[in-house]
Image (cartoon, rainbow, N blue to C red; front, side, top):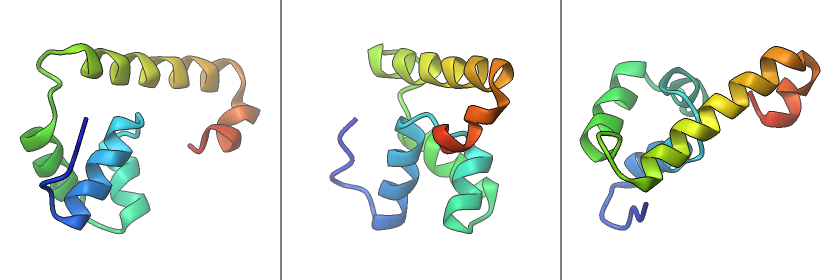
Length: 79
């Protein structure tokens, strides 16, 4: 998703969101409250439909599956 019209922090949030990070993870990485992340992702995300949203959900599911079977891979996956 192109995030050209967003403020810098909103862009950071959406870039991490698009890469499959969960809201809590984004909040921890950026040092902000999870409610701020949720506000931005719910406003700018296309998760209610679309191919990109499907890819993001698939990436998240894949990450969780790998982490559950290979706990040693968490660090490599950036979790």
